[in-house]
Amino acid sequence: MPRSSFLTRPSGQRHNRLLLLIAIYKFLHALFFIGIGIGAHRLLHKDIADQVDLFARHLRFNPESRLVNFLLEKASLINDPVLRRIGFFAYCYAAVTLVEGVGLYLEKAWGEFLTLAITASFLPWELFEIFRHITWIRVGLFAINILVFVYLLKIVVDRARHRAKARKNSSA
Image (cartoon, rainbow, N blue to C red; front, side):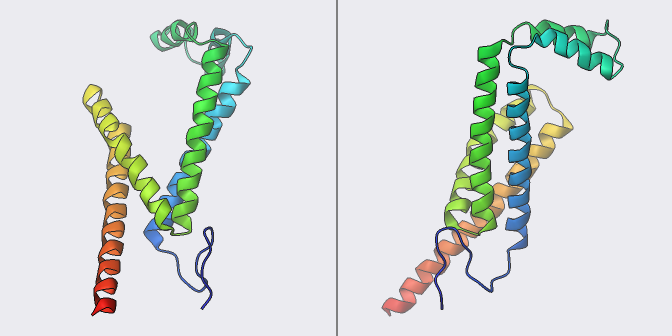
């Protein structure tokens, strides 16, 4: 029986459908952050307030609305160094999320552990954000991340139990 390498799945095995679904979610997450990075780099050397104004007019928002005025005020805080940092961190996070997605797609233990660790690290922050200002989007994303965390934890614990049982049987 051929052994699987670091980046390939053993041949003939079917995908775990939930891991595949989580991997697709991670790939979409990565695409979102790649889009943020591209957007940040496209705004370099441009007047952000002008861009917000153009965008608001394109969407036919009232230029005197509170939302447009709020965005125009905040746009003055964004300059090229801030955009570079936003782009850099968006690309870095997209890369990590892509690695998670590949690990989960290939059903590798390292992918499961990486996703478990990163998901767990963001849960307190997400909970804080929900308590600060509750929205359906925040609650929904928190619920998805809790489900991902619990499912991956179950997989990791089951695998550890299986290995411990196999060692016990082989030593007996």
